[in-house]
Length: 173
Image 1 (cartoon, rainbow, N blue to C red):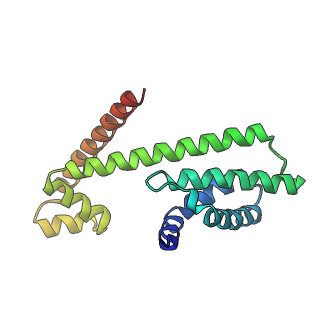
Image 2: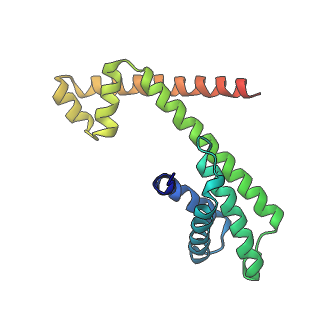
Image 3: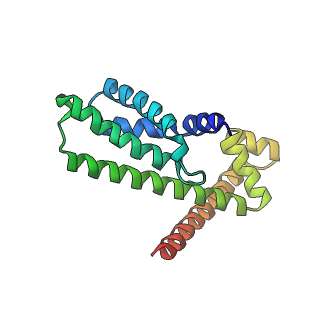
């Protein structure tokens, strides 16, 4: 089966995160560009070893890490950081990416639990990008009542996300 479309879709979706990870471990943008290109080639060459359903971004960043090490080995000018420091930076970056994914998943879950009226308000504000005044005009409500409703929904979402993250931390231990 041809997996090229799947690869292109995954690389396109995660390329900015992979590049950001590489950039954090690189000295210059030029080095990061070179490593990203090399990483993209290696990702394609090793794509058969990627297990669908697992984190493509984590898999790709691990490969990118080794490509950064390879460039450091070839280019002594990149040795501003020790390999152990670079490893710690890479581990921290991967942890932060995983936490970001968890927060996004939690927010998506919480958005799905909103009452339809609250979800519609959030969609108008953040997806359609209507101003609060436009939402008020369209719904025949005061701007103040829309601000209050948005504050209430934001607080509900924040509390829901915090609850979900606490629950997932408790289950992961």
